[in-house]
Amino acid sequence: MYEGAVQELIDELGRLPGVGPKSAQRIAFHILEADPEDMKRLSDAIRAVKERVKFCSICFNVSEQETCAICRDPRRDETVLCVVEESKDVMAVERTRSFRGRYHVLGGSINPIAGIGPDQLHIRELLNRLSDDRIEEIIIATDPNLEGEATATYLARMLKTIGIKVTRLASGLPVGGDLEYADEVTLGRAFEGRRSLIG
Amino acid sequence: MYISHLSLTDFRSYAQADFELGPGTTVFVGSNGVGKTNIAEAIGYLASLSSHRVSTDAPLIRFGAERALVRARVARGGQATAVELEITAGKANRARINRANPVRARDILGIVRTVLFAPEDLALVKGDPANRRRFLDDLMVALRPHHAATRGDYERVLKQRNALLKSARSGRYTAAHESTLEVWDQHLAQAGARLLRGRLDVLELLSAHLGTEYAGLTDGSKAATARYRCTVVEELDDDGGTAALPATALPPSAIPSASQDRDRQDPAGGTREAGAVRAPGLEGAGIGDLERMFLEALAAHRKKETERGITLVGPHRDELDLFLGPAPAKGYASHGETWSLALALRLASYRVLGEDDPREGAGPILILDDVFAELDADRRSRLAAVVAGAEQVIVTAAVAADVPSELGGRVLRVTPGHVSP
Ligand SMILES: Nc1ncnc2c1ncn2[C@@H]1O[C@H](COP(=O)(O)OP(=O)(O)OP(=O)(O)O)[C@@H](O)[C@H]1O
Ligand SMILES: [Mg+2]
Ligand SMILES: [Zn+2]
Image (cartoon, rainbow over all chains, first blue to last red; front, side, top):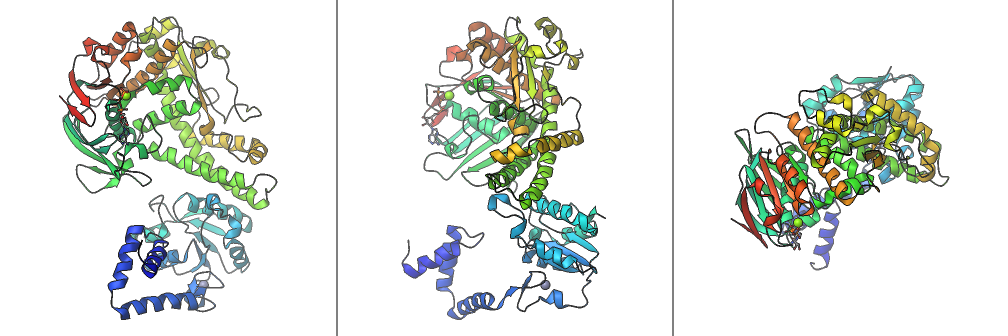
């Protein structure tokens, strides 16, 4: 145990995803020894995202305004919607440059063990968006792991009644993985080779 | 195949132990508690990524150490492979093959193949059904390592589905539950059908050997048979169990007589139709059929499952009934018969692995942990005669005199923390 502030910092860092106790300690001492100006920029950046960034009221992607840059961009194809679990997946898909449509961020995947069912995700909002009949195709790009597949199955079953074309990213994505870690080429190919679930 | 060198670091009672092994028999001798079974366990772990004694990894790591390391050089038909496995409690284990970059532990499955006999095997006959399911699944993975994923996928879906059923229990079953449950049904049926098909393949392979091996260990007066009782196709009772039927309820062709078994030792003879192991209701079913049957069973038990908050049908609740003659082995077999049947199950899996890869030098390593002490003289020499055919046999014994002399081989002395010639 370290004294007050240092230990508090280690504890806080240790709560971040992917940071174990040893890394937390290493980062804390790096911060202690680093240039104060650099660390001020870091803490300002953290404060800024918490104060300024919210979620797009249409697609739930992160945004500094009421709606995100993608939803505001008139050049984006409004007939295709790509459904992802998290905002970071939007970034992963954007990097491939294979997709020119719009997004819908669910905010997670169906996971009964974690107590997450359809009601905890932005699925109702997705249905509302579909009342806009300019949308012709839904591409389901949930993670290629069990919970992502289950979410895809759930969406496909639900959308069947609406009569819209539903596709799922082609396999080739490593099973059990995270969409955000798929490399650009693989993810890009997955978009080109998506398979139809309905329609 | 054989292991030519084994090195243990912080594994069980060994801080560091290194020793050479060779083809043929090696007997580890030492008094109780010195660490003989620990060696058998380490070799078995390399082959199956699980211990025959404990279900978690923590006890495998030496007290006070953070991780255990098991390293082996494996010779397979003139080709040598170095495998290295790092066991860390509560974290994913890592492995290295030929000193290359670390890979997932699962990637070393198939490099070492073993069949391990141990006193714990009595539970194969007397213990609860999970022991027999594990026997089938372990053999399935040993035969086709990709089935490690088949088993893992099923367990993951099952956990999710059970969590959902639990949250839906006691009248809190909503429309959202219903629609999500249908999704998990579909995934459970897909994963379960693959697992069932894998088990059925194993049962079919075992069928040719179980009766013969049992007959070979005994005087042959009773036939050993087995019946896979699948919750997907059986009637469930109020507790969600299935009723054990006596072997006599099977068609007569399913119960081979002991003399028929003897005849079947001819390796060229058609052995399949004799069928010492059966799976009523599932014979010939493909993955698609099994998936459909699974979905039907889930639909039929929907009410019971939501009341109980648990998945009642599926391979995780199936049973492999064992019989000696017309009587179930569990609850009826004598102590000696129980032992012979457990050995016969292991020997049958040894035969199955041998047939699967009949190339010179590819046969599995046999590990006999403390087995001879449990057997009478007759069965000792019968067992010795069978295992002498393996390329490498690892034997542990507290008393060297318990090991039949016809096995011969080299003796290594075990003292706490050390192995010496
Ligand atoms: N994680 C561990 N760390 C340190 N020592 C351990 C650990 N696990 C087991 N041991 C020790 O190993 C010994 C048991 O070893 P093992 O089971 O191999 O004995 P054995 O030689 O097979 O004995 P027996 O003849 O009675 O079967 C015990 O003394 C136990 O305390
Ligand atoms: Mg022992
Ligand atoms: Zn948006």
